[in-house]
Length: 135
Image (cartoon, rainbow, N blue to C red; front, side):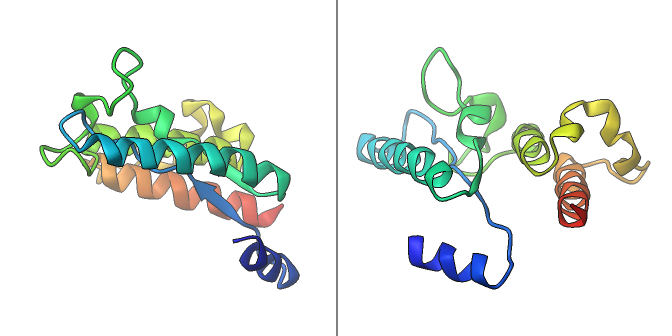
């Protein structure tokens, strides 16, 4: 992964990664352990290699259980629902442009056609990427 990151940097490409999404408690315990180990490694590796990291895992985790918040996940326990997509959008927006941290700044992204959280999340991420690339 370090070699891949070096190639991107050599090409002038900015790198941003996200942690792995949590799963609901009904998923095999081995999966939870692997996700935790990988996320921990990523949290240590990314800053040492100058890579921005969006902590989407924490944004979807229920602090009381340590698993994905059921209210943010689809019935499959793997994929986020509309509310989960909104929860994912904020760490990405904050990572890509810290000034975007306040939701009021993001009002320009919203239109009357953004009825789904997924559409809003996509707009937020695209807006943040455009601002980040201008830097």
